[in-house]
Length: 433
Image 1 (cartoon, rainbow, N blue to C red):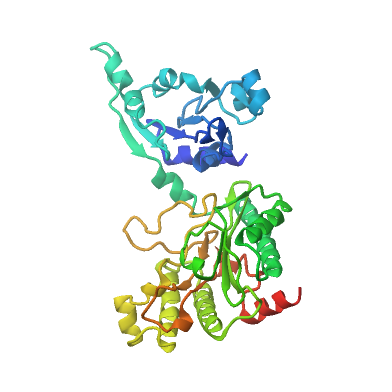
Image 2 (cartoon, rainbow, N blue to C red):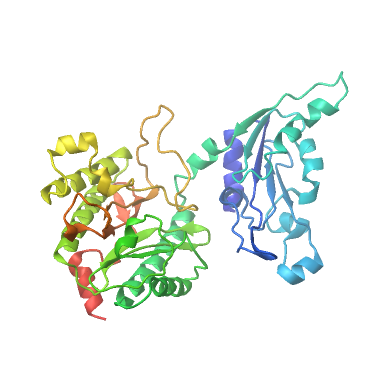
């Protein structure tokens, strides 16, 4: 099983003086006795496959009982109201724990499980037990007789080991990501084909949700962004409650999640199916930047080259359109293009939409790309209505085009290329409905 393999790999990175503690998520209250839909912690899931709330995994390299899971015990009344639990027996039978304890025994039992090991690798992203961890690691030292050997423990971060490993995707992970992308491709195409003036942004978002459900996707990777007109200048706009107006663009950033793995795709298209002259000029510039950046992706490429390549294309285009002044090298040096480009051009993609893992190596140099890395490339141009230094005809235009890219043995694969992305293809697709 993949989770056993991951735990075995992790144990190989550590020595027998180590203990790993990974804390899962708790349910969050939406209102009174109604909770938000529960989403398990990705690190806990990555190592165990366990999806229930209130869980803690303990992994002890070299121990005969190397994997221990703390979880909720079975409770007939609670399970009648809120669904079946694995319980302690299920943690062992279905999730391969060597032994399991009730989560309410954590404070009493966990310090004993540390035995005399001195290196405690701790991962608790939500800080659920931040007030307990030092008590756990100091219990043996403080509660034993004066002539007993004391365990003086180090508290160490697990993230540099586990998160950097997650940057390289397994074959199984790539299959899940590709399925999420496939669902998103269908969702974007359905939205694009359905768009017409007078609709509400929320209606497009609902079309996406309905379409990805056909692919078995129960969740989105992040709150869907359907931003028409000037709304697109807000990078994480999620009100999705404005009318779609003829003559404006709609920027849609939407990704399906499939079995805990994410996609993240952005397309921008004209609400009435036809780009204006100014919209087309800026759109083509963004697409040129995206294509230039994708073209250079291959193993061995420094991560920063993707951003630098896209920004140079955007900067030169903004100069050519007289939205920026100066020579290209000057503009690149003083980064004056950033007033219109705003953000970086991509991030790792996996179980988290902005997936974990460093972008630098241990020497603080930019990481170089390797086969089976998956990430987004997403250049954009944003000129809000409030921008007074440009002509009125450019204002209120927001364009971002984002694809999901996988590094292959000799180059790359654009996983999301099937969604119409050229001006001609978008206009043809929208008018052929």
